[in-house]
Amino acid sequence: MAKYSIDLQVGKVKESEASSTIGETIVGIDLGTTNSLVAIVKDGIAQAVAGPDNKNVLVPSLIHFAEDGSVLVGDEARPFLTTHPERTIYSVKRLLGKSYGDLSTFEDRFGYRIIDENEDRLVKIAVPTADGKDDRYYSPVELSAQILKTLKARIEQELGTPVSRAVITVPAYFNDSQRQATRDAGKLAGLDVLRIVNEPTASSLAYGIGLKDEDEGQTIAVYDLGGGTFDVSILRIEQGIFEVMATNGDTFLGGDDFDQAIVDYLTETYSLNLASPGLRGSIRLLAERAKKALSTQNSYSEDFHGTSLTIDRITVDSLFEPLIARTLASCGSALKDAELEKADIDHVIMVGGSTRVPAVQRAVTEFFGKAVNNTLDPDQVVALGAAIQADVLAGNQKDVLLLDITPLSLGIETVGGLMDPIIARNSKVPTRVGRKYTTSVDGQKNLKVAVYQGERDLVADNRKLGEFVLSDIPPMAAGIPQIEIQFYLDADGILRVKAMEHRSGQSQTVTIKSQYGITEEEMAEMLIDSITNAETDVAQRALVEARNEATNVLLSARKFLKQNESWLTEEQVAAITGYNDRLEAAVKGDDKDAINGRLQELNDYTTPLAHEALDRNVAAAIRDEQV
Ligand code: AMP
Image 1 (cartoon, protein in one colour):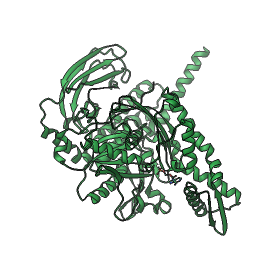
Image 2 (tube, rainbow, N blue to C red; image 1 turned 90 degrees about the vertical axis):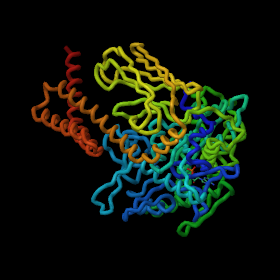
Image 3 (cartoon, helix red, strand yellow; image 1 turned 135 degrees about the vertical axis):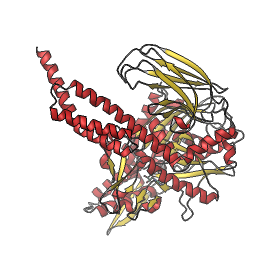
Image 4 (cartoon, protein in one colour; image 1 turned 90 degrees about the horizontal axis):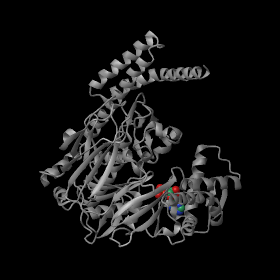
């Protein structure tokens, strides 16, 4: 059975964590592709929070970098989407934790410029500087942090007190790097992210599903149809633990496609001439108004430049039918992946603005053969669930099952002194997590496994719990050995770490007392440090990652020189050596951009040569065959 990720849902923050911020509200945040919102539990009821000057709880996930250097977020940024698309960023969630290579096929879907520094590295967004002569680069983490800062300010204004702790939701299919990017964004915004929660898990919590310790487990389908994306997730909840059994969906299917179907219909029926972008924009807005109106009424008419356009419910139902059918096909695939039948689903939950469309509700009800949960505002469900999770962590939901959790992350040191958390803080114990690693040097025989506890990005700033060496790894080229590190943390906080090389079967285990000798004050201090140092930590990590990559590329470049010396010209060898030397010098410095720049130069120069080498190898292989 395919297993994706687990939300260790129910649990309280240990007293020690709460001590520095007694009574402070923990907020729930839905950081969405199109809209974001913040919610809290107040007087026992989860509620989304509106801005002081408008009644809207939704903050459009838009960021505008004005020419005067100011940054506008949300509704204020909207007008600039059409006037200054190159400095108005939308859908940043689609970029989080992604490399340019992941995104290049979608490049034309962005009105702003994403840059291709190197296929493997995380993508950046280039925004022209005020004089238009240069660009400033922003990472998706920095951009998401802007949205989070706006939400933080909004809730602080509402409560009249500072807020520093949050639960943030992510799609169930987000991988480690996307989750880490979300955490980093929280840190940069000055938020201690107590948990990253899967959106379908939050949606279940919003409907009260999984809050109580039911005797029998429950299986839930969460159908999430937004403006631009569709997701379906199948969850299994057992004793407070939410397991994502399958996810499916379409990253480019949503309400926007409903609008387009209406535009196409009206254009054809009324022979509309939509020559200008302005007309095309206004007919789209009209189509969306019609769609929304037809969710509650049977017919809709509006004048469009002298032509009275009418469309009715029956027509849109048939227009939407093929789009809805695609979502149902995804539901079918998700069930299949989870090895379940429709009848196994106990609850169906509707999320996302487009689930207001009656034809969608009907089709989903029919498909699963049971009434759907749709009483909450579908735009708010995720944030409300996040707020409930936050409230549970704050210890306010007394009748909720209390599970033991680990208060600090446990992880190991990876290349360059980076902390790689294996068991995230606030994970329920006992727990077992495994992760695969490999070697970074050819013929490496020993691997040092150093175990740390803490939330900082560099191990030097965390607490070392112990180390051991996995020895006698058979000599192999760097990157070939498959080393699995397993962490097993028992209910008493005893950590057992096992390292095993899969090809040779070599293994080594040590036992460590994870929280040994740490006082509650020290623990609180470590957490506060991780927030106050967020900006330098994130920058430090970026620098180390750039150095690591540069070191790898340097190794490959040297290998390449050796393997191809027979045909490379003297000039080519000299050029590569020169680029290598410059990159090596940059690696010794502290300037990440310089390292990336030198790396780019080396790559630009060697890529065509690498292609040539490949062609020569292929030609040689064919010659051999013919011989
Ligand atoms: P979300 O991304 O979840 O905020 O969903 C936004 C999408 O929901 C947009 O495509 C909206 O047009 C659509 N939407 C919002 N309200 C309605 C409604 N009453 N009927 C149909 N679609 C709606």
